[in-house]
Length: 305
Image (cartoon, rainbow, N blue to C red):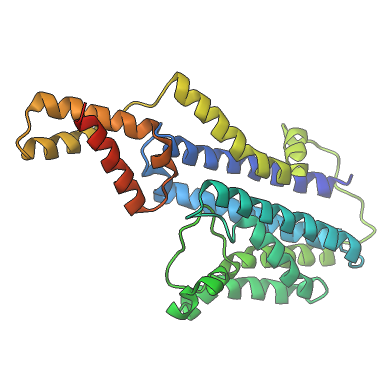
């Protein structure tokens, strides 16, 4: 394997590590071990966007290197089929667990669709791919319209509202990241001599481990969340998260405002908070109305005790 491919695998492996860390933050919030607002904070959202950009950019570079001399159609369609199949598996799995917010156009769907678009630029001058990538990122600012909010058009990414889904990487602007990767790789390979030897075999610390993760990135992507969910489910049984102090404080204030004794409010709110943290139905509810309805059921149960 050439030094170039090892470096690319290592970069992809680093993105895999970042992805697992990002999803760990979401899972910690989902299971109540950290504040539910943390995954929605600007730094965490920016972290997630940077990971998605890295995966798509690297996919564009890989596409160019794999078809540098000529387009190997058999290899291309085999890779496309694997990615599209994995995307369908993600859609099915999330539909079974989160039917109201399943993944219908996430990172794998985007990589598959963007790979088809990138075919147009594998033999085009490299500035064309870079320009196309820039246009994709600029398009939402100029072309966004409520007309694209229709369900069958949402995947394009030009709507004015964001759908409820566990992973959202619409074609526009995110295919632009792969096109930028294609353009950058085309530029570098055209400027390099085909006869030039690979770079010296100098291995950065941890490069081999990262390269291993990079070569198995799709498998890790598919299995890491089910594994994390399983581990957190076991952790809930052993060490459940503490009740949310902010929720308890607000609950007690509202309870006392209705004339209930302080001792009752303290016990009632602690019971409701603990039940909410343990309740699987509440954690699975993805819409506000569903969560409020289930929370009210838990509160009624605690009030009756």
